[in-house]
Image 1 (cartoon, helix red, strand yellow):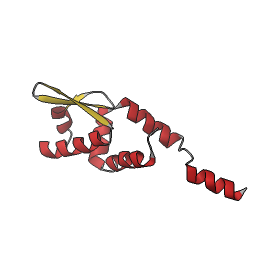
Image 2 (cartoon, rainbow, N blue to C red):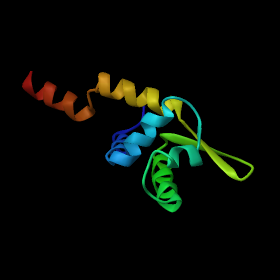
Image 3 (cartoon, rainbow, N blue to C red):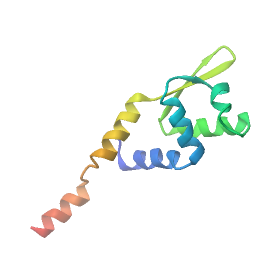
Image 4 (spheres, rainbow, N blue to C red):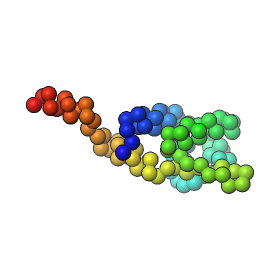
Length: 102
């Protein structure tokens, strides 16, 4: 499980509407940057910046094939995110509060 700081980075990356849409597109499978770009009205350099943020957060992986970049979701990170959201873990701070209340 990723720590709180890492989860914060994931949520920051997903906090942008365009990046969230990119993640939704990639949920269908691996896509070439050129195909992702067709769904937006911004430039290739802007797409590169969005992909840089998503990759730095660990949400997306990229692979160069010839002249093209292909992107896909990092399945491990997506699973960790899913678990975190559905089962938000109790932190040490929560445990300390619970102990004080007893």
